[in-house]
Amino acid sequence: MPIRYRETDTEKAILVGLAFNSRHRLEVTESLHELARLTWSAGASVVGTRIQVRPKPDPAFFVGKGLVAELKEQLAHAGGNCIIFDDTLSPAQQRNLEIELQAKVIDRPILILDIFATRARTSAARLQVELAQLEYTLPRLTGAWVHFSRQYGGIGAKGPGETQLEIDRRQVRTKISHLKMRLKKLGRQRATQRKKRQSQFKVALVGYTNAGKSTLFNLLTKAKARTADMLFTTLDSTTRVMSADYPCNIIFSDTVGFIKKLPHQLVESFKSTLEEVKLADLLLHVADCSDPNLEERTVQTHKVLGEIAADRVPYLMVYNKVDTILDFVPPPNEGAKAFTVSALNGQGIAALRAELVARSNQFLSQTRN
Image 1 (cartoon, helix red, strand yellow):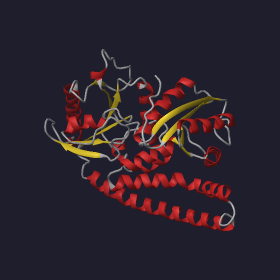
Image 2 (cartoon, rainbow, N blue to C red):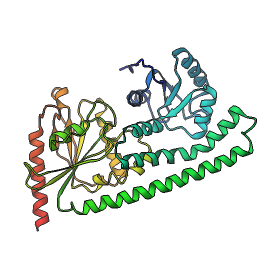
Image 3 (tube, rainbow, N blue to C red):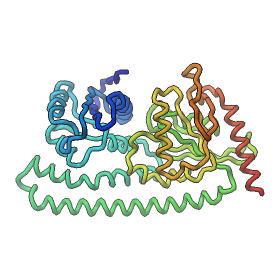
Image 4 (cartoon, one colour):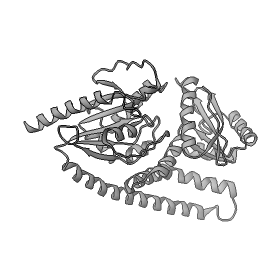
């Protein structure tokens, strides 16, 4: 399926993917489709895509210098002003590309960080995103100053530049330390709140971004969490206590969606928020059954659960959006019950609720003994 281009008055980007090692062109093409959705979510438009196949990334430009020259021509022809790479660029590669292309060059991690920055609503989420951005930026400060020196030269680009670089580094490290202290304080507050809920059955919704977690959360809890057909609608964990129709209070938590190549800095900074997942009694792994990359998305979600030490929490597979696909049959999955539902029209929700009642009864019985 070709990537759809959208004409807007915003930044116009060309997306670049590299097939290297064991990565096939088809895999890179699918990844660029997701990158296009991320680009639209960030408010930019896609005016072109390029895929290169080579044994390994070029140490100076990530892609070959021939493609760099072609990208420069393509930018001029399409009226583009930005290149977005699907993989992480080193500071040197980003700097070299910007010098050659005379255009903004970013990679997937910084694009995701930018989307998170615009979607964060609570103070905790904003702190976590800012921390991730600063930790991503710190090793790139040297590149920024060398780029400045090479591009402009002359007065102000010699010795004082190095002095300013050290000042900037120190300021960023101080800010990072300050943010970590504030997040630790918030973490302690969350831990206190969790102690009060130890006797309650805790259910966390997890899954790939845009799988429909928030819509399902609203249906199960009668809440009004924000929903939209876009990536990363939910960043802030939302918690609701439900007692109606259940034998004991159930605490439902809606969490941030996962995605392939999620920046390591984000996983680290959001660990305090994702404690809700790690300490849950049951996970609802929500997956979009109409997604052609369903298996890969499921594997990626399990991978992130492993990174936050939540891969041993019992879970149910919940295949959502069954209203959009005929005769869907859940793939075999050892160790977890599977449910097919539509959070949009309520199909299959009764069976899922019945399972939650049974699980909460079991939990209640164990806590009383």
